[in-house]
Image (tube, rainbow, N blue to C red):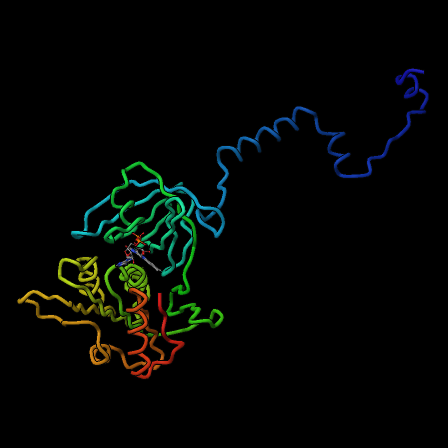
Length: 298
Ligand SMILES: Cc1cc2nc3c(=O)[nH]c(=O)nc-3n(C[C@H](O)[C@H](O)[C@H](O)COP(=O)(O)OP(=O)(O)OC[C@H]3O[C@@H](n4cnc5c(N)ncnc54)[C@H](O)[C@@H]3O)c2cc1C
């Protein structure tokens, strides 16, 4: 019996849909499904935003060198670019790893915005990675990974810290003392910029040691910051000062640190230099009465 006849004599079997999928399949014309599929495929291919962060603790990602500026006789500023819809994925004060073959070294972006970040790199004599970065050509790519680092400044005076072997802790402070040497200024500078622009109620003092005047990195930027923001103060000390130098002289001694330190009880001390420098400054701070948990050694 034909379907038409069945209908005519009222025997058409009723196959009730038992899921929403069956209802849709029955009543939507097939071409609509093709359009639906084609729309989503195109959207994900061309307009999907993908990962929000470039580095997220997994694989190393390539970034392209787009600009290079000479800052001092041995220090350059490098600007790297990546897809602008992503942000780098580090918090203020954290660093990234730069990979070169089997070697990887820590560098702290001094600024980062969506689509680009900036590194300030000091050339170390016979240094493998710093030497490579100094010679890198514009348009070439570098592999980076991260984020890494025990200290993050979250804004509003809040630091999250993993000091020594203790688990991560959160600290609220109104005063920060930074003691750094050479390229150790980079993580300090990232925190300073945030404090100067956003957290105007916080007080930050920096004691920055270098060999000569020509070795001081980011001096123009630091001086401008101190001039424009009253809550930021920078003190330079040189181990080989020129005769006309009127600033501090020598390595940071206990007296020098005491003369600059704030007297606030909740003061956090950020220290960034070589391992021996960090150890020496930490010892001085402990002698001055700082609690160990207030010291952050980068
Ligand atoms: C958390 C963190 C953040 C850092 N951020 C920056 C940054 O933003 N900018 C920057 O320029 N550097 C930064 N550094 C230092 C950087 O990671 C490298 O250690 C440095 O660039 C040297 O690497 P290299 O491969 O060129 O030298 P290597 O090949 O590792 O070393 C070559 C020789 O130089 C000596 N040496 C290594 N490092 C130094 C040094 N700093 N001073 C003097 N001698 C050294 C070594 O003992 C060795 O004899 C940071 C380090 C840390 C731990």
